[in-house]
Length: 317
Picture 1 (spheres, one colour):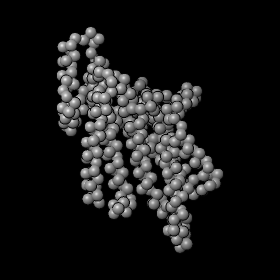
Picture 2 (cartoon, rainbow, N blue to C red):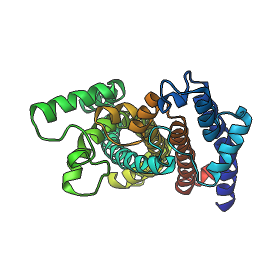
Picture 3 (tube, rainbow, N blue to C red):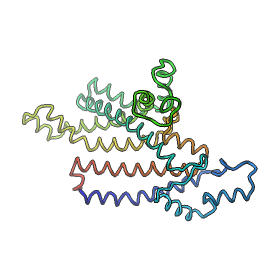
Picture 4 (tube, helix red, strand yellow):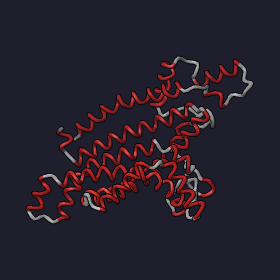
């Protein structure tokens, strides 16, 4: 197992380096001048040259990448052009908020998706299967930003049950685990959970249907094992794939929540990315994308390890 983990880490290292290179180059290919956000309209050529030198934009791209990567390895993601604050502090707070939102959304989606998937898998071709499958199709088909707007209209504007935007009272940028802040989390978390719920439901339905038709299940029933005992074996065989899907969905939600966080003004990485794009804040954009990408690489590594712990056949393969 230790050798397997070391091999996976060895595979992840070049991926992380490639991700950092792509992250660095993509933001430089975007049109426009990032310094235009802070330079006055009548800035002289000398002032522009000084600012370029201060941010390192006067050097060739390979040199810029080398210097940037060296600082990143030492925990320095640079300074935000728009705010003048360290990028690491800005990204750290936003990642924490996004991780809370994505984790709760994944938990909701995994719970209901697994339930609907098992119901559909055990009741194949019945009305329960059709209802559960319809919910799953709705989950993967509906635009989540549109669903978020509808949720705000219904539960905030019309019924007045839940607050529409923000992470806490008075526009707080930090979320705390109490009842008041939980009310701000419900709408965006439920909206984000719809897609993973649909994906996990369809995956679990297919897994359960295939497992129930395998020979070992028929053998267990022939030996007189109770249906609950058979259910435990089905869960054990379906768990590795389901956990892999859940891990990937958590990564997707953390990195692809820009629309949901914009709709609900949730102060996470998506909201931060949106602001960085419009302000052409290059260091903040690079730092946010890099942290999200590294989180996704790390999450894939953890999912591989957990899968192997649950199913040793993966390690032998």
